[in-house]
Image 1 (cartoon, helix red, strand yellow):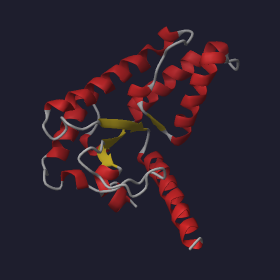
Image 2 (cartoon, one colour):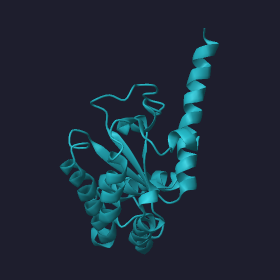
Image 3 (cartoon, one colour):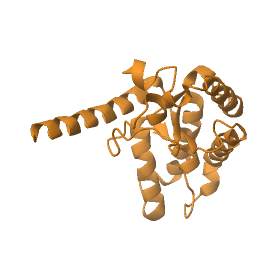
Amino acid sequence: MDQYVFSEQPFAFLEQPEALPRLRSHLSSKLKSNESDIIIVGSAQVGFSLSPDSFFRPFSDVSDIDVLIVDEKLFDTIWMAMLRWHDPRRSWLDGSDGDWAKRRQKELYWGWFTPNRIRFDGLTLPEMLRPVRDLSTNWFNAFRSLSQYREFSRRDVSGRLYRTWEHARLYHESGLLQIREIIMKGDSQK
């Protein structure tokens, strides 16, 4: 799986080999992550979508670029802030707080967060989530500032933060298994 899903030469940059090092260097400097822990995934990596919802849709001029970043420290910054936010109330979370916590628990289960998509509207004790808000803002700004490079200026470039490479592998392996089931089901109906 690694040789295809996490390989070094993304399909999107076959004619622009300098794009991947530029993306890695830029994001690494903005997020203080290791360049080697920043890769391209999805249709920009293999040439077609690996999402069970849009499997085999080809990468095109309007496709986005999905970035995977493994950084235990950044991940734990979010996780620990959420735990501290939850701690004063122990087990009782309802309404907006409960819904928010459930969404984060699903992400945490898989070992990933999309920092720029974490919202804080309507939450109690939002000041306890300041580390998450700061990281989310920095994440958003880092990805948005990629638009200064022509390779990325016309594309939506977004990233997902994983705690470890094993978390990333397991998540992507799960998606591939879902695709296999879809294909097998289609073959059995012929």
